[in-house]
Amino acid sequence: MQLKLLTAGAEVPQEVHDLYHASFPLYERRPWPDQVLLLRDGAIALYLVFWEEAFAGFLFAWPLSSFYLIEYFAIVPAMRNAGIGGKAMRAAMQTFKNIVLETEPAAQSALAQRRMDFYQRLGFRVFEEDYFQPPYAANYPPLPMSLLYYGDTLAATQFNILQEEIHRRVYNYKAD
Image 1 (cartoon, helix red, strand yellow):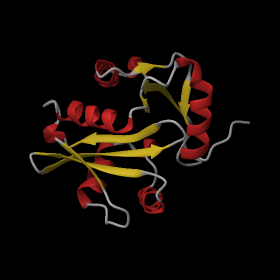
Image 2 (tube, rainbow, N blue to C red; image 1 turned 180 degrees about the horizontal axis):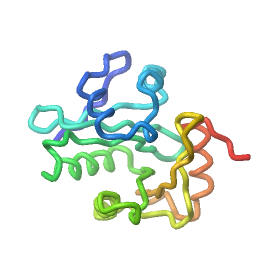
Image 3 (spheres, rainbow, N blue to C red; image 1 turned 90 degrees about the horizontal axis):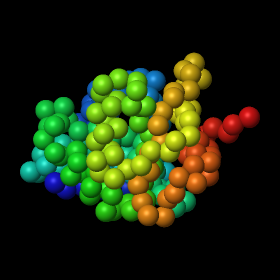
């Protein structure tokens, strides 16, 4: 398993575009041209996941003040449930050290519970506070999510600080 950082100015592979659209519902994803612009501007980083030299997935990460927010993580459907996602996330955990990510609350569905179990098995902890993902478009409502964290220097007491930075930097959202 290998994580490769897409170099600045490189074209985003079509496989990333296709997997992005197939893996995330419209209301959970930023419009693709905006995502590519953020990548080209250096606001986010794109890591390609390779397994035995084949494209296996991707990870979009925001380098923030003291942590990385993994905004999107997806593995090619035919390669899921083979341990590749866990290996990719462990590589990210070694690379980034402090990680925060959003996922659907476990109670939302059986798939959301499986996803939550996956992250918790890797050592992620769940903030107990209510969290919502600001909408990517004005006509969408905020999404109830769970905020998870990994890393020795992140603590549950930092929820409000982390939430404010994520909302401001990633979503350009400021609470009233």
